[in-house]
Image (cartoon, rainbow, N blue to C red; front, side, top):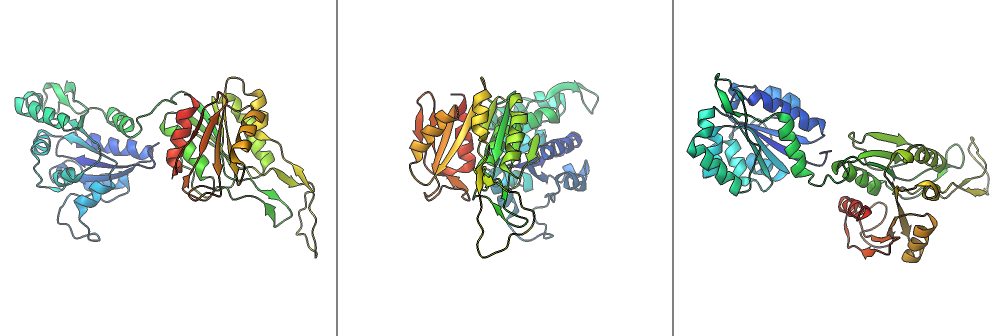
Length: 393
């Protein structure tokens, strides 16, 4: 879910440090990258090795350490972070942050941050209720810091009251909310096809196309981040498939992709056909390598996956893609009608910034209700969100 995000976890010196270990663990299970900065006092409660083992990254605590390749560490960490979490946030660190004091690695890094910041206060009840701490917390809130407030309970000192650090589950849930603000696909199941198929000519040759699978994979990733359960049917792809996608069906030929889609689409609310399956396959299956001065291939039509789904989809949403080199919108509108699709995403693969191997795309979206809109060049990750936005509009 958080595979494209890097989280900076600041750990200050309090007994709740042990709970910060679970924060790292939960973030890693969501595939986030995690860097940990500890204050010197925090290292008295939990050894840096624990956080290094959980995060698979070195812990930073000494501003002047020369053990690694030189860089301005606090600036590098700040630039890298998509989100900063400070947990536990002690009375001391809260007061430093509020006043702009930068006398260690954590506070120095904080002042260089441009990303959202979440803090989870943890301290004795009397400290928490102190007007100075309340004023500093309010000051941080007004500056844009998100406070996951302390809970009531029995504290390490034996007192009972407010000051207990929020549970790691709640802190990570807030992180997901901040990094993935749209959860409009929660409870929905989305089937996405991606990549090219391969049709064997003989034992060594095959027919395929230029599809990289990048667009389909980005759609699958975006759907997961927005709360969906995703079934990914992938052919040949040139990019990695995130481990957090709940079901991945790998196929080679168009017939295999057809079977996989037909076996899975009925349990889905949305079917997005972003793959580029081969339209034709050799009529004869040959296992040995063909030889000769001339080779004649007889091709037969492959099953039309989108059309088959369109005939039986019922209330499900069907999105098809149309990649052309000319007469783009004529082909797109015909495909929208012929496949009984709800939406078509059309792109001219000859345009600079569009096409199969590019990390960007230029698309026009049309719907059966008459909606038509062209979008400028943008990263395929952004196109994925545009597509998901339009499906339920």
